[in-house]
Image (cartoon, rainbow, N blue to C red):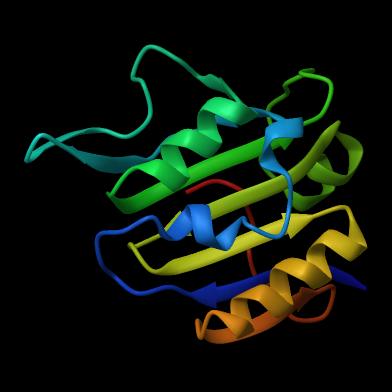
Amino acid sequence: MRRGVSFEIPNEYGSLLGNVLKPIDITVFAWQIGSGESYRVENGQLKELFPADKDTIGGAELKRLLEDHTYYMIFADLKAYQNGEFSTIDTYEEFIESQCELVLLVVDCSYVTIYCKNKKGLELLHDHAIDCGFENVEYITDENDTRTGLTV
């Protein structure tokens, strides 16, 4: 069974996550912000991409951050919920049992992993990654998933 998709994005400044998530409507979700390190360029200076005093963000605000800014992702941990019932998710099994619909992880600037409960959405994300020319695009399945935790 397909659990998610993984691929590599360029290690550069840009709006890459906005592009990665284009196939889905991220505005319908409330997003939990996990640990990470990401910076946006504002007036020639680097600022935290995600507000340090917030651990959640609305979908519309996240869309603006990811599509309307130039930023550099080192690590990111974002989890999408439709009903806003946030929970701690450390494993794939906890993800399946939770109200979380999508987990997006970025590690070492380039390595993207997305777990998605919606199978059509997963296919769209996979095909879009290929269309964007991202490298090493592959489905994560029950057989090849080596990740022990869903955090960065």
